[in-house]
Length: 203
Image (cartoon, rainbow, N blue to C red; front, side, top):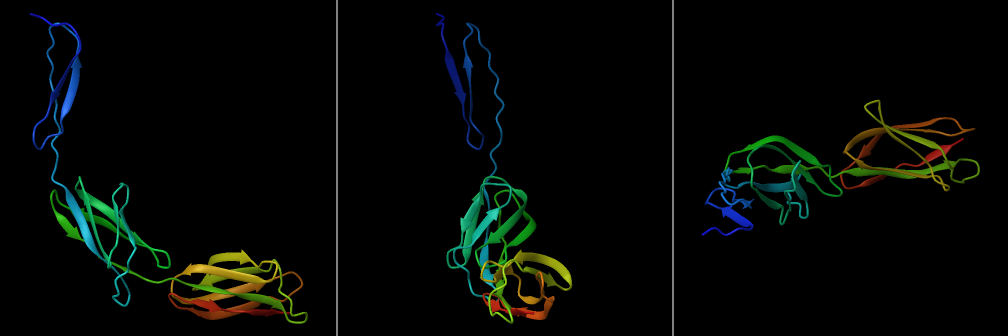
C-alpha cells in the first residue's frame, strides 16, 4: 500500500550532526551527508595586574567568535565547539587591553592563556592667562611621547583639558593659543591608575 503525502525523514547518530529532509514522491530515495561533531575545546587562565593581583570583571573573548567570559577572582574559562588557532583579548575599563595571538588548542583539549594588564593613567589641567588669571578657551594642547605625536585637544570655555587611557611613562605637552607664546612641558610622568595634573600659564 502506498501513502501519498509529505514525509519528513530524519537521521541522527551519536557524534554526528543530525540531518533531515522532505519527500513528496511516491518512490523516494534519500541520501544523507552527516558532519562529524568534534569534542569541545577550551581556554582558561588568570588575568592579573602588574603586581600579580587578580582582576575581577575582566572581559576575555575569543576574537572572531561569540565566545567570551567574565573573570571571577581573576579566573576565566571559555568552552567552545571548535579547535585550532585563535586570538584572545582581555579588556577592562581603567586597564590597557591585551591580545594574545595564534593560541593553538587541540580538539577536546584545554589551553591556559594568562594575561597581565597594566593600569592606564591620565593627564589633565588648566590653561590660564597669566595676566587676567582666566582660563584660555580653545587653546590647542598637543600630547607627544618620545617626540612623536600622540593626541591633541582644545581647552573648554574655562581652559580645562584632559587626556585619558595613557600607558604609564613620560610624555610631553605643547600648548599654543592665539596671541600667546607657545608653552612646552617635557618629562611629564604618568602613573598607572592616577591622573597627573599639569597646569599652564600663558602670556
